[in-house]
Length: 398
Image (tube, rainbow, N blue to C red; front, side):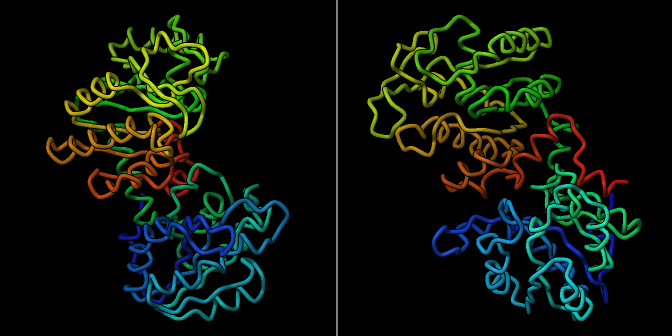
């Protein structure tokens, strides 16, 4: 599979699919987190340094009925200029005649940012004719948007057909694929997978697949209480997917049959309301009183999980241990973050943080630079670990 290091972009227009789906302040429409933009800067820099130009395309938000100003990529133009230090032009349409004129006139060292791809419904439908029009903007297609690699959209998968020899992964995509492959196929043991979040249903397939490669799977977050109920526990008012209780029993049996340690939290910090102002206490997870709900893992679970993490050589973390956005319920997630950092720093473990809330937690605690890799694509990485081939990756591989 080719990467941008396999090409010289001298005199070429690179058509780059990036993930500039950045959060904007609702009032000012200013960017509140530019991590997705800064991630792709090395890809843009390589192309410009070669003597090429960049036609950049992305989506932003979820526009329902065509163009909406709050979803316009014009809001990121000035910031892109400041990040790159080169001229950045903006096309008010992604497939309009004026846009084609602008991309045809683009000079080496310049960037053209196209308007939001999702202003056209054809983008998400994977429309071939729409992809063909987009393809006219470039000589070489570069996919650097891992966050959308699991979508078979026109700009992420279908468009590659029009660049049979001139298509490649950008640095973000190449790193994401390489790090995911390291976990899936080259993991050093002991290998612990930490799986958190609210629902078993969201993580079912990843747990099933990890049973084939991990030594220990730690379960935390709201999903743990569905497991506890399956084990006959009293979980009070804690989150539970009643239709998944039998499934958790099957997962426990499968883990035992495969010799995998499926580690559940023994205790929780419980609250009498879903609020940072609620009354709290520690409780055994098999005996949570009615009227109380588990919102974080407890002190015993923190210690149990920490020991396993510190003894591991490969660590995958996807999903928080509790409602870490509230200060009263962040300790469990912070404890996991501290243990992952310590295992990485002191023990030389390879640690991959699986995007989404896990990446948000690592950022909140200031640990982004103290783990091996933080993924930019939560949903895409999940599907990769579920054993699915991502359309955005497959399109480059073919």
